[in-house]
Length: 447
Image (cartoon, rainbow, N blue to C red; front, side):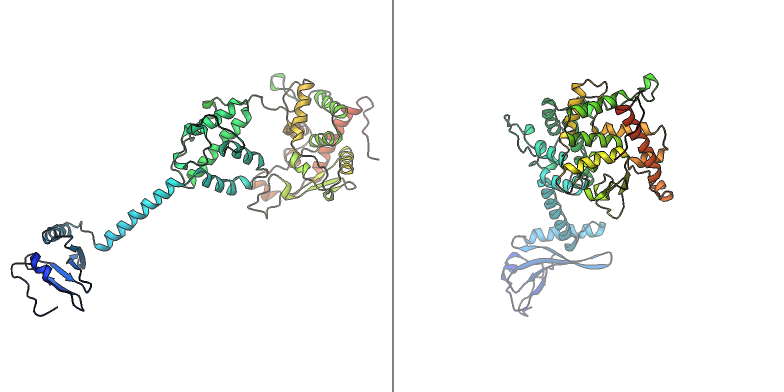
């Protein structure tokens, strides 16, 4: 500090502070009128009010303000306030203040970012991490594209809740937006689609909550009944099984199965006919049969191998788990497979797609006035219900390739193929005798 500078005995003044000149080194000038206050003159000619206070025994330096933006009077008042805060333990250091300011700034930026995250952004992540790991995600992805993204649809009424919601901020999605979207589908007369859309929206919002995109799901406590979503068709029921009101049990002569086979033989083309019969006789899932390769069907050994990647229970996240299964084939099933493979020009057992199966089966049910509602899945349920009469629970579940739980996996490492072969042969022979040779009770053999 220049030796020529002498501080006023009664304390600093504005004129004195203005007269301070910068040098090649910064220096401090104490204010004798306010203990602890000083002015720091820097090389860049700036002048700053500073002070040193002790907090919990530690010496802390504080910046009070820059002169002349902060006046001498304000600096003294601020220092007196800081002394009182230091005494009662509420004084915040410069470092703590800056850290707090940075934290508040980051919180504001994070909030702005969170408020700008759209449904589309979260939906894409949900599709990649959840939906696309499913065995057949296509139908539900198509539903999302159509109803949530609005692809392929026109909107006459340009109100917010009738527009696609994918461009909205996900935090702004309210119950009315989902309700309106589901109601549009319901008004089109598709109860099943409305139900599926309800389910996927609820799952999506719950997933968004778990992943911290929203604090609460607006659909958390909403049920389908609250929005009047009721499936038009009643649940499917196994063929030729008496209802509980009639004492349950198998219907003698299997009239529904016989009627179904007769209609298939007389009205349905070869591939679809054989596929539907095999679904009933083998109890497999339709996708497993439609994805079957010829190389996996051994007609001589009367077996059909379904690799793990073709099974519903295959977990793409745990590919090391073997869910493959060998399906034993009866004589009649071997004939059906042989015909299918002879008609197919590819490496697949059949070139048939799933889309035709439900349509054909529904037309048969309506046209020929079957008593109960049934679907493709009902064929699998029918086999399971009938073979329970002569097979154990484990064998029945094994025929459907159902998991028996973790405990069963530990103690049961067998495929039960001999037991399953016996159960499926009894079932196939019973159906064949009932449909084609009920009088002579003779089973047609291959060759």
